[in-house]
Length: 458
Image 1 (cartoon, rainbow, N blue to C red):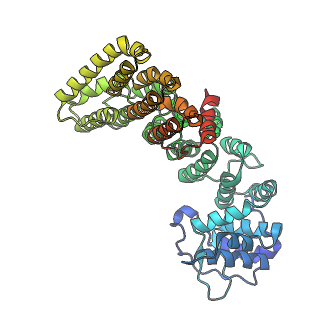
Image 2: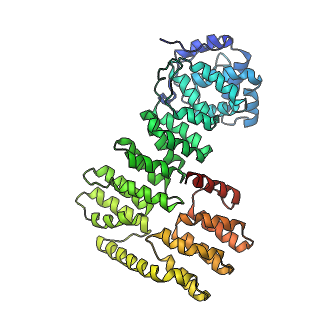
Image 3: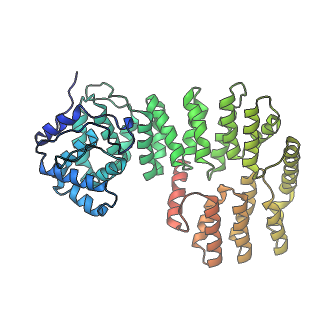
């Protein structure tokens, strides 16, 4: 059996004392002090400074973060080895004989990783990877994953997404799905463009890695995740696809109607009431995406023999329409009225919205506001009005697009953030705030960067 890498000589006694007590982080809530007391015999000065800073961080009134980071890095790169020891062993050493044992809390770990982030990444990466060589200790690999997730770049994510092996060609110890999920969340939140790497690599992942990645899509909730979810839902017949279906509602709607059409098509293949649980989840996902084909099926299933399918069908209709109607007949009448209104609008509204008479345009906009089916199509009729010279018309168009709640209009609205008219800029910012949960406000360049991620994906 391979041996775990030896810690630095000055910390050998410390590491050996803790090694027999160390437990996976998932065994305890963050910060819970349930381990027996571990004695530290004459800890090195670097370790003592680190332990003192981490213990101060747990106080109800802790010193400023910068002060704590300064103490953690008091020895410069000489702090690296003891920082890694604490990260791996997940224990905070005693500074004084009377100190109670401490399991490394989440906040302490984040502080420790922030300190590592101020050291050269290549140096930190090499030091930790030396400890993974032929190691069978899951805590070493857990620390490696956490460090890369918190500090790593695209190349590090690429390595994590590959089937990882020790230098001897053996798989390392298995980590839990939640650990993978947390790591992928950290990678993807820092750069949504990394979804592209995930799309390329997910089929080769270990089962727990893949499930963690799919759950991370839901937690990050970025529209860029829709493509990955479409691939998984459309290309799998196992529980990985079921996991992906459950994340669609969390991700929500995106900015690209074509991507959503492909996602809806993949979801519709799972609408089999013989598998009631999967059918319910797929119905709710399609309701979130306001898929017209699924809504017709929902009308039929409002009276399904399975009451849970009835409830999911009703939820999908309510979500897609922003209405709450009392009984199946009301829903059928609403749907028929909307189909008739949409058919009439397709014949007249595109022309009326571009009429030379301002009153005709305004009335056409107000009619468009009432259409609840095929909202991406309706929004596409309105978007050209954002380039009209009349300030009032452009601000009203922004308002109607926000009321339609159709995110495919976001790219056009973003460009109005640079408009020369303050009223138009304000209307566009207000519409964007309603249409997107992304906290970007009126920051034009931030929005452009956000949309660039989606364009690269296309």
